[in-house]
Length: 289
Image (tube, rainbow, N blue to C red):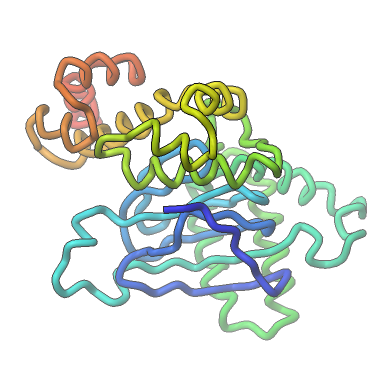
């Protein structure tokens, strides 16, 4: 799976996605994106982060922030899938969709700050999530000008609801990769997303980046502030967290299904990332629920 640049024709565009499963590749585009999940469950990949999603999930993504949504693997294997089992309402817009001078107006200071915060992506939760979801669903029935005003009100509501806004990338602080590096790094992320539950081969990844293995490892660390091994391990641990929360599978199955080669290495890496052993993590999340 390769990260693809998506080309959009309008500065402000609403799309209701209805599919058996989400099939958009890992991609990025110069528009900001507001996405509401209506149906479907799985994992969303945004920049450096992997997170579970379910109906009601609502995120705002900044410019050129790579992302994709993937349904759970069980949904890929259904013989007769629901043709509308994966649904999302997606709004794409450029920050200057009302003109280049739009954001320079004093009244738009809040929107300018909102778009800056969106560079690393954030999720919208709590009462604001419910309110924005209802308002987004109402947009489709509106005439063009009322729709524009309603959309601006949506952005304003998000901007002033700081208590219900949660940064998606809390570890790196940003995903500010230079334009020249973006497509190369995205090819690497796309490969990891497609293969992290299996054996990942460094030579294949280095080839995708058109580098030697040694040069690639140095380059990846410099650009992303983490090693390639750390990236793969992070994806695997978060996958294991999902299995521990949502299934009763034995620990050895969780280990192998998450891409770890043996239980000892799994326990060590899980504890290093989550500050608790996997068995204790399962007990904790069961107690919370």
